Amino acid sequence: MTTTRFAPSPTGYIHVGNLRTALMNYLIARKAGGTFILRIDDTDPERSKEEYVDGIKQDLEWLGLQWDRVERQSERLDRYNAAADKLREMGRFYEAFETPTELDLKRKKQLNMGKPPVYDRAALNLSDAEKDALRAERGNGVWRFKLDHERIEWTDGILGDISIDASSVSDPVLIRGDGQLLYTLASVVDDTEMGVTDVVRGSDHVTNTATQIQIIKALGGDCPRFAHHSLLTGPQGEALSKRLGTLALRDLREAGVQPMALLSLMARLGSSDPVELRTDMAELIDGFDINRFGAAPTKFDEQDLYPLTAHYLQTLPLDAVAETVAGVGVPADLAEAFWLMARGNITTLEDLGAWWELCRDGAEPLIDDEDREFIAEAMALLPAEVDGETWGSWTKAVKEATGRKGKGLFMPLRKALTGQERGPEMAALLPLLQVIKARG
Ligand code: GLU
Image (cartoon, rainbow, N blue to C red; front, side, top):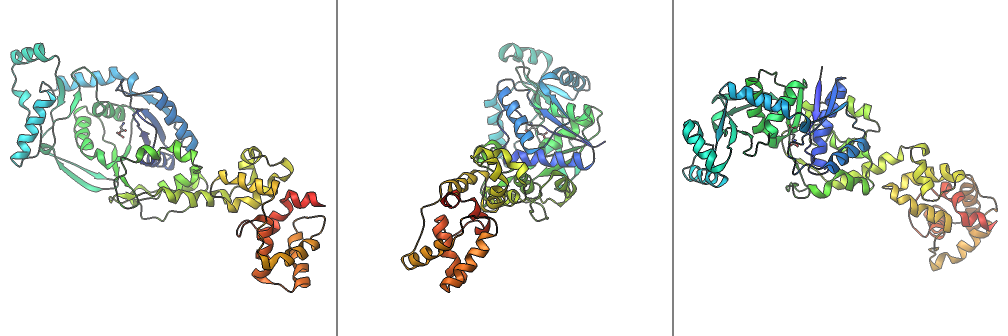
């Protein structure tokens, strides 16, 4: 059965970058009728915060990306230790004692000689006595996985055929000197034991994948299918990494972005399919195909979310927004008419307040000098009772009385009644103008 996971480290909130990872894994699982696991990668007790675990769940719920179960790495440390023991027994695990400064020096030397900065495996030559001495002097070493120096190959769902020479990669550290188990091993154990069949993650994980494939094989597990999506850049192709902090989902939600607008964009951005608004999740799931995504960096422009949000809001019936409409003060008997009038003239729900203020209090009329007489004449013709038909019959009467037509007829009336040149259909707005009603 298809099983995917979204595996955030709870060291921050979800932003547009990791949303892509979450969404792709979610869509693959749902499309196949499989399982979507929310895996909290919290092996680092210092940086992981419960507040972020809650925040991540809230954000996924807001988006409607419902997970089937939650797994926490901090509760599975015994599994990782068991895997580490197994690797030790197999001779694929070795302790190394270099300090960060020593490693840095080695890297610099290698680079100076034009060589790739790969760990030289000096620790493999240490005798037991030398290790004891180093341990006594420096404390426990780190544990590195001994890669097989062969080519590591896989067919990536996005990048295509990948082949990496293992000798160009340092033996990965899987356990730190202080005993903390690192993500690389934890992730492999989880993916294997949880039957994960498909892993989608950012292309910054490609080298990780190469080493993880060898660890999976060493532990006798089955390799999932891997796909690495490109990283997001800003609209001009600039790195987004520094700005991602301000592109947290909670900030976008605060700014009024609608979940379906965000999902519609993220499910298509970087693929060969056009971005189109989808109004429900089923449509997104149906139209998703990971193979249609390209390897090139993907440009993301936050501003694209607003037309999609506006478009989405236009499709909603009152039911979907009744609370918000009531919240801005619209009385229940006017709610439906108000929403149908306003929904095509807002970018976010935030804009509703201003339209209700206009309906409730009226606007400072905008009347050009040459229109004064015309407006006075028109207002005298406005019937006492105003309904949905009034605008049509009234403007017809005004046209007959004044001889004005087209823009010269309609624009001065709009400006006088709303104080603006643009806005909702006047036929729908007129009966909502409380000042006009009160006048009768
Ligand atoms: N916790 C890892 C991250 O956020 C997960 C990567 C993976 O998908 O394996 O980068």
